Amino acid sequence: MSGNNYNDGGWEPVTRLGRMVQEGEIDTMEDALNSGLPLKEPEIVDQLLPGLDDEVLDINMVQRMTDSGRRVKFRCVCAVGDRNGFVGYAEGRDDQVGSAIQKAIGIAKLNIIKVPRGSGSWEDRSDRPHSLTRQTTGKAGSVEVELIPAPEGLGLAASDTVRAVLELAGIENAWTKSHGNTRTTVNLAKATFNALENASQSRYPSARGQDEAEVADQ
Image (cartoon, rainbow, N blue to C red; front, side, top):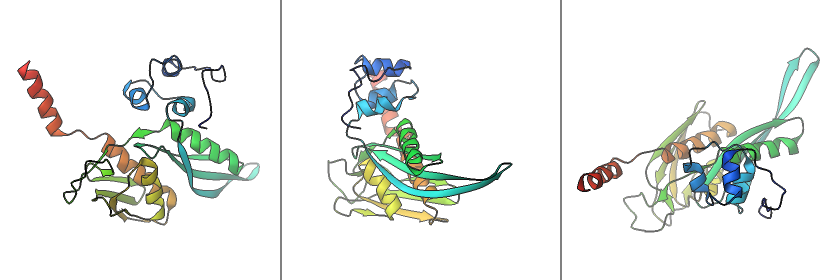
């Protein structure tokens, strides 16, 4: 993934955002997400985040009956991230395991978000963005995951699935709580991602107040 060069004719963008990235008008993932344009090409993420890692969190065989008989597919749960603030999550299904994994990775790239990182614990005085900026929660099915900022040095007090998603996002220290049927990996991973997404969509009253004051002074 990291060795691809999409300006050598190997990638022909089909969206406005893709063309802007290829032409150099947008050169960071944050600018791409803030552009307001839909992210529909995984190659955009490959170019803007060349060091992206991916991790398969779960693979399950799914069976269903059709008129022609029983059909078997594989469901793959994947997360991707640069371990520096960007993370994505998705599920993919296909008749073959390898194809299901590739589908999930491709969709996860299109779902990528920017996670606000900082030092949100009252016990911490670090200036390094090693944890979350605030407490956040996410739900998926019966599972609810709560993420709480922690001081530097604590590490990730989390289950393996939650830890994997947080590590891909670049979160090094956090307390976590989970409720519901946490043995269901797909819901546990999705709830963790939803919690990070909720944090990324938060608006801070202090920031709004500061902006209003700046406008008033002008």
